Image (cartoon, rainbow, N blue to C red):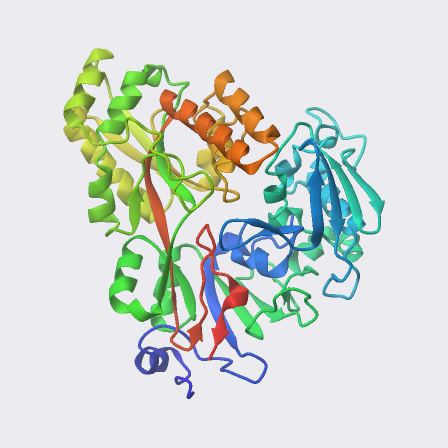
Length: 523
């Protein structure tokens, strides 16, 4: 098949819009470029990197979640427990790092210890809090007296024994996160340098010089020694952008071959690049959270009034052009246990909303609503402001935005008053994850301040369940318990999209909307 011409303008005209032709198809699979948010490559160490398609390309952890949402073994040969607290993990023996070093049980233990050790200040270190010994590596005062998790023991070249602080039936799902990937011995000679040019064990390796200070792109090369399903393309150029909108603009100009698209861009893509657009429901929810420390929202009837005053269908239909689904719970049915109608106050009933607010004493004074510094969120929140003004008669309403790294700390410190519009994606495709992140007493993303002994008790039952069915049943009950208290109002489940150049095929999206870089084929 003949390729489109090289260059931005030529790409738009010859390829029907979007996609550079640099690299072209070759005998070894060709190359392509992708635009991603800046944070995708800000850090490349497992303990520092976020959950992303780029991290998935560089690293392969013990388990993975397949396209059906089922957890399957990857580097692990088996992950077993009789009580959901003490786990025995046996590794496959054929795995190697991209420098030829064997992947062993010690590789995982060393990586986990480094991530959990407070002086290393790794952003994903909190994910190891459920393993015994984490508290000793993260004392509230002073320096830790140890740098190893007591709950992780290497009992053989290919065997790990892991002890959790409490039972957790979904631990195999947790292990699928790239934060739990292994690191080779070379990593510990210079963790800062390694963060810029890591040696992974995934289908793609970061090519030298890696990420330069202040750099905005990296190159990934296929690791032909990978024992799993190998990547189709020989090389991938990863370019970063501040927002999805700027990445989409670059795609339209021919600067990248793949870009994610959301909001109005997704509508534009569906009209202009219908044959080059891939969409998928996202395992996430956009919600309006209530600051439970703000006395004005202590009355459940006030929270119900706010929720019933929001026209979710109008927001999805008009603002999002149908690229979302009105929410009636905290998670869609694309994850195990999701799709429930757990929110009785998630309909649209302005008259009932006014009655509830009046019964609670009415509203007095001004109101400020908050969201993160992101165009789509700001547009949606502006619509909510107008609906609350019209349907509840609150005339003095203002809107404020903050960067993500500010709004979460301010909410957790209870420095913010007024509701806030935020997004929450499931860390793994199981309702337990979404429940825990939004409502767990110790969760770093429980920004409403919600605490419930009943919720915690049901989550403990879910965590200790010996069957998947029982775990899901208790987690669903826990979610319903929380939603009866309405610490937040689910609004809609987003739809993710990605546009690609015509010369690419096999573009697939993961459950959180990330592009599976390994599946892309260059024609």
